[in-house]
Image (cartoon, rainbow, N blue to C red; front, top):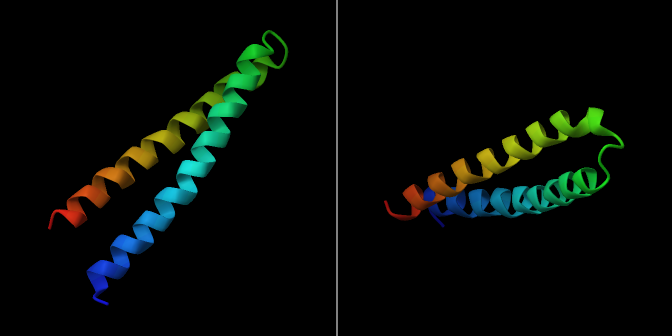
Length: 70
């Protein structure tokens, strides 16, 4: 296997892991929102972490697309 193939496979693995974490964060944010106003103090932290995970996931998917297209 070439280095590029290994890099693509590693990136796909990282995306799958991060996608799983993103799904969990989405559920956590949803649960927190449903419970408002209880625990409202956590809202900004959970929202910021959720945003960052989805931003990173989007960035990794764009990188994968570039790697696969040459």
